[in-house]
Image 1 (cartoon, rainbow, N blue to C red):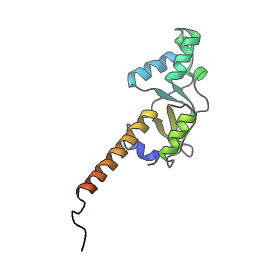
Image 2: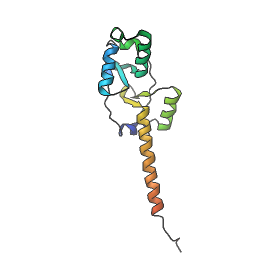
Image 3: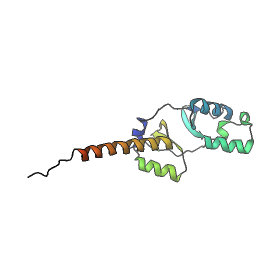
Image 4: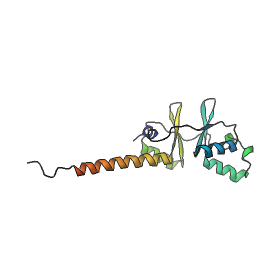
Length: 148
């Protein structure tokens, strides 16, 4: 299975924010859309990624003054990215090694979306369920007698 196939199983909506917007606006957007990450865009290009991890670190360091903090101050400026043809096993390894719960998918310079660890888990579960059904069907329809 490739990264591109995960997009078939998920909502491919892309949630973005500008780096000059307040962290409070980012928190509002993340809560409203029930997402754990926002792609930070400037002039039509991805310049960073904001996840709930960066929000929590900012809250710990600065208290509840999220209105005074901009997204650009706390975002991950050079997030790990993957490509659509990447194998899901390689994707999982990258996510684990880099401790990334959210990974932007880039097709060259084009941002296709963001894959979460939950998206990967759902896709793998779907694939395993399908394979399990196919194997059960194969075993169930196995010929009772050997050919003469």
